[in-house]
Length: 280
Image: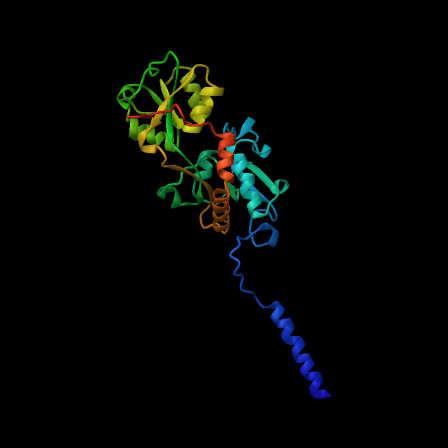
């Protein structure tokens, strides 16, 4: 009888140890907030950053928490993939420069039309691209640039762009104007420079160009796209360098691309690029 009792006790201990032992999860599913495997700045909350003001078509009415606008909608779609419902997503305001600066972040992820580049990868993590775009040149009716149909025609003109952006790099390297490109802190200042006559044309990403000429600039004209940026400027979600969230966020973006969600959101919030020829 004593031997039987010891045998039964040994079986119970073995079962308990087996229950506590780590299991081999071969499902390949991404970590999720629902299973407690994601580490965020605030437990159970995904903190997302974008700039203030945030502009359409990326964010509608400067309110990213509305879910309206392409990047706002993408952020909530990624959050859902990660297991965070809308009530467990919070937003913080950081400038473009703050988002791309090296060092500790006050966000888990940031969406702010940040182009993926090797230089930025040295101090930041990126998800896989959630959107690919080109840079475009915008002017106003009556300006010196209104009839420009080539890079040569733009070269003698005054060009403006936002600091730290691919728009600025493209303006400098592709247009290479005779006078240095005028640099501004944000796209609001870029637009003001155009409307006040400080510059003859500005360079912004193509969706922004199409939006502001349709909704914000009286007499706005999209002159065309810059050839070297066509189809080559990829926006990625920004994370702190070596963030433990990076693999899961990339998996989420890839899933949204595969299931057609990103394409649907583009169709909803971003204007067709038709009518914006490539400038040669």
